[in-house]
Amino acid sequence: MIRFLSSIRLTIALLILIIILSVTGTLIPQGETPGFYQHYSPRWSGIILGLQFDHLYRSPLFLSLAFLFLLNILFCSSQKLPAKFKQIRGQIEFNPVEGRAGSDKKFITGFSNWLWLEPDSLVAGLKQKHYRVKIEEASGQKTLLAQKGQLGLFGPEIVHLALVIIIIGGLISALFSQRLTLALSEGQTADLPGKNFSVKLDRFATDYYPDGSVKSWQSLVSIIEQGQIKKQKTVEVNRPLKYDGLNFFQMSYGFDWDQAQVELEIKGTDLAASNLTLRVGEKVQMGPGLTLSLITFIPDFEIDEEGQPASRSAEANNPAALVQVTREGQPVYRGWLFYYQPDLNRVQSQPDFNLEISLKKFEAPVFSGLEAAGDPGMNFVWSGSILLFLGLLACFYTSYRQLAIRVQPAGKPVLVARCRHNQAAFYRELEELLGQRPADRINSARKK
Image (cartoon, rainbow, N blue to C red):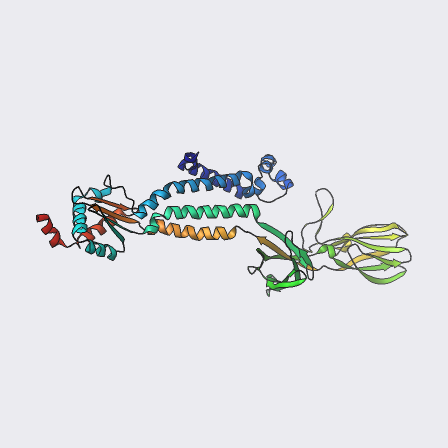
């Protein structure tokens, strides 16, 4: 099982599957209603909804693959770490010599004699080239370990750790992130589920450019906890309010047409023209036994596919009000009144009802569209991204180099040289270093 989880083949297979699912997630619109997918793709809607591809990055399939990839990275790293820690501590296997340096007699003889005759001079030369040096003597033999760029040795593990942190952050975000949309009018307060505080919109303002286009929205928002204002800030686009793990963003604005107020002009043969102002759902007495009701208001009137009145958009492009008049509880007038095109008013009335009603004004309270977003995994993702950048720097720009020499009075000296990157430069450095040895003493020692 461990062998399977640490397999490179598994890594490649998981990466391919995750990439395929990620591409699928960009092709399929996310977070829509089931009816949308049945209309969007009738043939595949069952699979999309069954596999939860409408929320793909929270689907059990995607989360399972991400978790398996997390385990794969952990097992791959854990298998290599013990050997690297031994290497750092100097637990070197001197049995077969390694690399070009190990098979070159010039390196073996030169460094071995230097270590035996002038260890302090060798240490000084290595430290001059920024090596960390350690010499041990035991049982008549000398062992030297010099290394630098240890961070480069662990570069791949740092990258793996960064990926682990990013994946954990992504899983936390997928499982526990929150996104709530709030539409608040001035003075309105909204409670947040699972939180012990509420949000109040104190003031909303819209700034415009000279051509009339929107420049910015500004919402003065208060956080109210236990009846007291804990925090207050003007929220603008890209300037959120942060509180208790949530960021409150300014997203949009609009009109609360459910709270619309209209002004109606009423004319009749036996009645002087008069104006009445009322809100949606409100009723007023027009006269003895006559009651006028504003049933609904639609800002952009249209007839939908099912033949029902609906609003094409939230903008007041074709405003219309549905009005009804009753006499002693019986309807005598009912119809749609259009603001821009009163000639198109659709009215049904009793023959003896001789009043004419028209829509003269309308207004609705402005609301601010806020989004409350909480993502507890984002800090993990940012931390992992920074660590990933450092790990890549360590992999590609920090070269781990190690020189280990063991000499003893009887027996062949052994030299081990290791380098993760640019071995040619490492061997040139060894040659330069070997050129700094006390040549006279080494030559005299050879003659003896």
